[in-house]
Image (cartoon, rainbow, N blue to C red; front, side):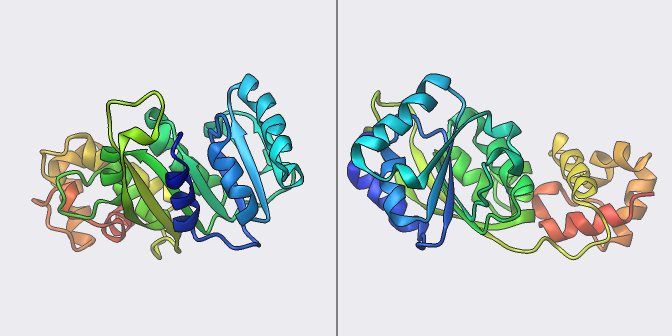
Length: 251
């Protein structure tokens, strides 16, 4: 990312306080890191590339602020709170690699309950999917699972020319605000199993799509009716609360 205005915009929209501990994924050469340091209590930068991870402290040292930076050379998809040198992140701010953006966001929301908010830059289509609501053509597994953890919304577009080299896709900002998951007796894993089954064959009715999950189409229909859901509906019509009700009815 080579556009200073976009970097400042990301920090501004992230709405950080001087008490926030930021986790940044994929800091690369550090353009966003340098902008985050003055606005937060601390930045934990998770970088999988050992060469870039070694260089980042040197880059920051030249500009000041090294005392507020911790670099973790690790895969963000495998990170746990124990890997963060004792810091407890409250905000996620990152320009995420497009191919892993959704799993990284979902993983961090799962393993870091301290995260209260986030602002991530992702491919524009991914931003649409994460922020989509029921009934949208792009509403799917990422939309539903993200909604388990947070209120998710689009926070603006990002043009291609802010990057070098210039990618062949547009980007978008996605804002995340942590909230409590639906009140349910089902576990997150059980609810997500229903979500996965419902969208595995999204053209099918829920009665048919959930037959394997429930044991048969008849049992799926019984679970759906018990949850107050029309068996002829499709997954893209339901919100996360409805999926949680269905999960509670597993035979």
